[in-house]
Length: 95
Image (cartoon, rainbow, N blue to C red):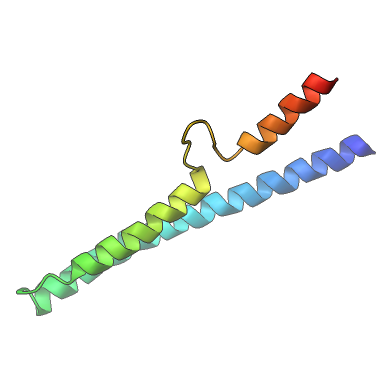
């Protein structure tokens, strides 16, 4: 019964991760579809001032942090699964 519970927990964790990745790629796709429209509108109607850079960089920064939060920033080995790996390591040492 415990093995079934662990398998179910692993499935739920994997399902959540897939949902997060799908959300990121949806965010990226929308960015790639909307930014050319914003650039076109800017250059068509106000070509003397390139305000599209504010949208491009602002939204791009948000997209970068979305990516960073999802795939992690591995600075000195402290990645997304670092805590879990350390817990398993200490549990194995005690056994």
